Image (cartoon, rainbow, N blue to C red; front, side):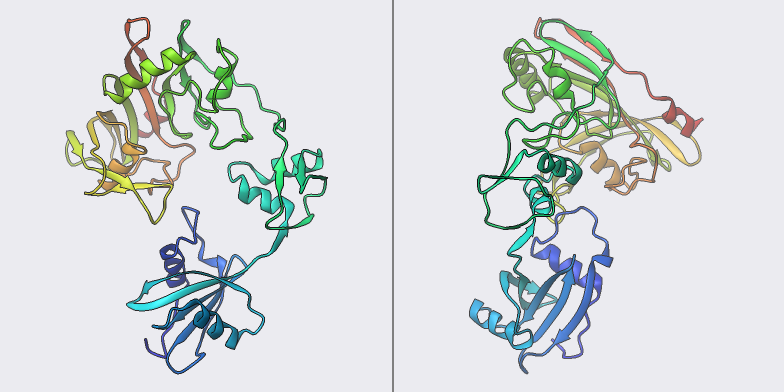
Length: 378
């Protein structure tokens, strides 16, 4: 590697991705600061930078022993206390990446890292209410500095006040409830502690038994930004029957999506396998090595700028409809993750669900298309 080599902020973000040091879906390069290229010895190059205020060191050197890497870093920064992240190939050269050790943190910051699904403000309330202990001692100050290896616990009884949900019910019997899920509501909590009311929380008041998890009753999931028909189970037996039916593809689901531009065909089958995007693990992508995924689309209505599509998935992969349409260059309006045009909401709606109820009745449940979809194509 040339001694005159330069590294851009984009290069550094790519380097951090390569070493699994990024968690967010979108990274602002303003978080990268103080880039410097140093030469500890004639044989190597040391890339130094800060990311989110933390020091990182990338040593481009064929010698990747941890002792050597630490010694070379210390030769240019005598006070550096680092942990070696790993080694790999970047820009065709062998590189070892190290980052500054953080031995202590604020209590609320540490809790956020341990409970990423909870807002910091909620965790601060837990602390102020005496619901958090550090090494068995109740803590009351969010700003308290604690060791990273401290035993930090949230009381099992700690719960933030959850707002009441009034979900529209399309059907209910002893086994199931069919609802119209609004935009912005989660199907279930993503962790042990939850700072907002979910469909599963709402369902808990209707159960004939104590829920066994924070996902109890959730047979199929609609994303937070998706509205429409959703069926939930009120007991174990009903849940198992419905899950088996969804798994065997014996249900029929119809969605409606608004996309920018016009489709090349008025009706077609999208048959493209989908896999998790390892560079952005919370997202998915079309990948020949992925799992089979099929979506039938049909143009319902179109204007010069937008198209309203009817979507009939025969498989149920996570983000399937969003990934398929984005791959075709027609990302769903409002879907910021997959490149959709900005909007007040993601324009994806579960319009109908045909399912056999645990009672044996085959039923079709329909949710009316929201008015905002029509306004785009009128």
